[in-house]
Length: 182
Length: 313
Image (tube, rainbow over all chains, first blue to last red; front, side, top):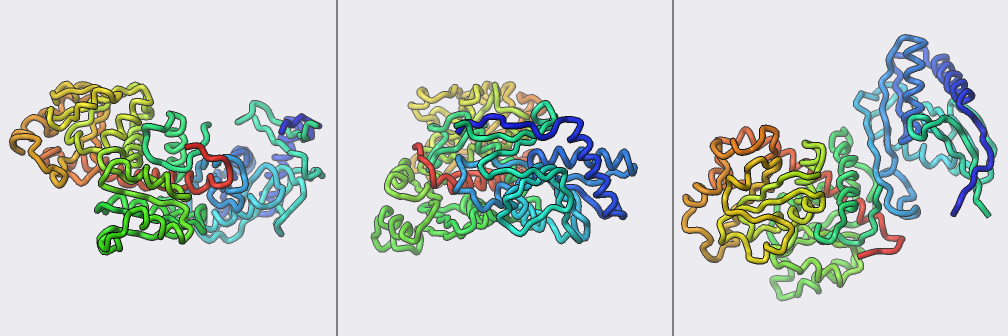
């Protein structure tokens, strides 16, 4: 299938503002930063979590632990997708017991990725609470899952693709909607 | 990044360099799982792995068993002693009988070269070669390569010396195929009687001098003298072998300081390696065991998850 760019939803400036707002919302809800840690979902969630970590350091002067998880081995659709996906790195080298884990991802869609991520986080310990931050919520949930902090809600049709591009991986910051080229 | 499309893992001879890299990259991710408190992921939940060992093995079997369990697969171990093989059942009938339980992956070891290939052609399940006769032992070579890549950062343009019982070693053959695909030069070194004639046709250099083999080698793979397979005499005395081919303090000096010494274990101390080097070489050899687990998890994962698309073999 060939996809073409339908529209650009967010640019660099807007993404920067949204991440700042999300960071402040996280800080507003979590007064005791000692118990907070960040975990990004591979791959773009990890970079978003990294940006939130830097902002918190700037604002509060506190450095939060940052981890990464790859949910490939926890998926429920392994045999349904194309060739075997390469397994990325999972790295949580701090104790999450009784901590507030802030889970970060770029796009919230069906909720299946988040379901897998919750399973994986729980294998590392028993957090006090898990909160979910997403840059984009595009709807079409298949599980009873919602995000605690949402950057932007974007109504989409299920055939469209929402692509988040970040400087760290893609050279620029933007969010675009792709649609199938008929 | 490359993709995995194969149904079986029979040897490194047939694999491309990219396919080897897919396994090694995946193994990197699997290594982390064994460092977690809950050393288990649900990737192979509902899959069945059968260890079909027609030849004694503790290490490889344990490693495959643990690898499958850490991926949440169900594992059945079969060993030929105490089985219906004793009653005269053929290996193919044995395989077919177990296959009837809807097995996803067979991990097979047999003392005759080619048997694993033979069985792979006659089953609908995936097959991993866990060592067939003197042919190949791909996961051992993959774990050697994984260890080398991790320690030296690359598999390119290395000098790799394989020393010892080349004749009986499937590990040597798998390593020759594997390392040569990364433009590394592989030297095999042993008494003339322990290097078969057809090695001229393999991508390796043959030498009978330990010094030539060791000189500036970044990787040394010492092989066990497999007395149990020696029905005839391959060298005049053990003392003579030790004198010319054993790794000791003296000839270790031919190696650059960062050189790696690997051994597929079990080691005959004071035959292949002087026991005075025990403290020096043991840590890495034990690390290999841990890496072997990660590599086998990667292999099982890649083979288990390919079912629904076209299969290349």
